[in-house]
Length: 327
Image (cartoon, rainbow, N blue to C red):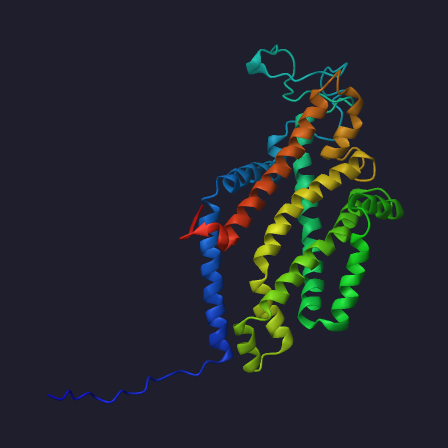
């Protein structure tokens, strides 16, 4: 008995042009970010970091509504203040005839709580703007060095190696000393010395991605080098850069507080946590609350960004998950 089979028909195929490759890339990118967010919200450390950052962000945005006093003006003439006072909270037993200052009054007769709240604005502004400038500059330099190689790679990376040869904070102090004390100059100094880290991360990612098959497909379809670099390679090089940038915000805030502590950052009466520590550092035993609350604010902010950065690292690393769920 013979079996008659019908001849197979050729399967119709569509030409794969650059637009189709782009659609595939966009679909994969969207799927990656959706999966990343699902993984991120399963990380307890990341959730704690996000909650802390939400509190800090709300404090910064609504500082005029939350802070009961002007952070830069002394209370002399506004209320009966004759000496530095400790925290006064009515519901905790403080006499009702005394004005309420939940974090006390500093040596210049200013409300500490109001200065802490407004200091959140300064710290988040410093961290986001400084890291934003460093990430943009470092990404461009690292992408060009990694993609084109040759003399461009050698020149860019050797210059950045010279910057890395100096101690981080010492170089920042030198730059601010030349430019002059001030918050803007401190931010610029920290941004400059942060560029090499982001450039190195971007370069390493570009070197890895540019050898993948879909890059060769784009070249075969006639895509230009700049289109391949900014449309194909960089979007696929962002995950490690995002993690490093998130952790870098915490470092930038900490370094700015250090520069302000030695008098090279924010200048009085700007409510910046590092300068608040510097002004009251001699009162650590007689009035410990004046150094405790600014230090706690710095620690909380740095911890929030570090927890978020660790959570992003775990969410973006496929080796740390099994079946789409964290280990």
